[in-house]
Image (cartoon, rainbow, N blue to C red):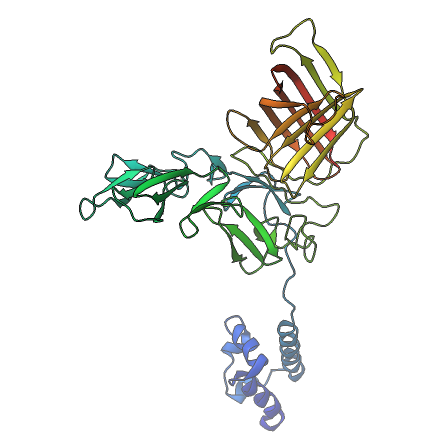
Length: 439
C-alpha cells in the first residue's frame, strides 16, 4: 500500500517545497488560501488521496502562472475628468469637456487661477512700488496677497531713495542703468533720466532699453507632445517644462492621455497632441481675465455676415445720421501684426477696424482711454483716396468689444464706436456691430 502511494507523497512534497520562478511565486501568493498548506507529510495519512486530482491541481497552477506573467499592461483610459469640473492648469482655468476627454481653457491673464476660478488680484502681479522713500515693495507672483518688502534702500554711502520701484542714489555714473516697475532709469549727465516702458514691453538693464515682450507672462504653449513652454513673469522668454508620466501636452497644458487622443495632432501653435477631428478639442483663452476661446469651428449653417454702423456728425443721435449696412464684410487675423482686421464698404465708403496687438482668439474690451491693444486703428475712406496710404478719416478715440473670436471658419462678433478726425472735421461711428465669418 505504501509503495502504491509513493507517487502521491512525492508530488505533495514537491508542491510544499520552495519553488523558484513563476510557479513558485504563484504558489506563494495562493499559500494562505490553499488546502495544501495544511497537508501533512506522513504518507500513512494519504491512503484515501486520489492521484489524478493532485495532478490536476498542479497542472492548473502552472497554467495560471503563465497567463499572469504574460498579461499586457492596460491601455490609455477612456476619460480623465467629469464634464463641468474645474481645475487650474498653471494660470489657465480648465473646465472638463468632451465627455471627460478634454479641457476647455480660459487664460486668466492679469487675474490668477486659484481654486477652480480666475481670481482678481489684490495688487498687480509682480508690481514694484515704494514704501515711502526707504524700500521697494513687490506684489507676489499670484497677486493674491499684499506686497512685501523686496529690498531696503541704502541709508549711507551713498544714500538711496525709492523711485517707481527702484532704489536710486542721488548721484550716478554715466550710462548707469536700473529698472523699476516697467520703468528704465539711465544716468545722463549725473542725473537719472526716466523712461516708461509700454504695456507690452519690459525693462532690460543690459541693453539699457525697453524691449518688446517675447510672450505673454504665464501663458503656455505646446513645444511637442510631451513638453509645454511657460512664458516667464516678465514676458522675456519661454521655459520648457516636461509633462508628468502618462500625460501629454494639449493646447499648452498637460493632462492624461486618453484613448481617443493618443497619437492625435494638436490644434494649437507648436503642439503635437490634441483631440482628433470630430472630438471635443481643448480650447484656449487669453486676456486680462476676459474670455479668449479657441473652440473648434462651428458648423457653417450659412449665417449671413453682418457689419452695421451709424455714421453721424455728432456723438449723440442726430437728424443727419446715416445707417450703413456694409457690403462684403471681412474678418481676418493677421498673425504677423497680431491684429484682428474687420472691414467692409458701402458705395464709396470704406470702414476698417484693426485691433492690435492681440493674441489669436482674444476677447475683451479695448479702448483709446484704457490703452489696451495700443496699436488699434479705425479708419474710414470717403472716396477721396488715401493720403500717404491711409484713409482720410482716422480715429482719435474708440471703444471696441470682441465677444466671440473663433478659429478660421468660425465667427468674429463684437461692437465698436469711434470719433473720426479729418483735419478739423469730425465724424462719429456709433452703435457699430459685426458678426462675420472669419477668413
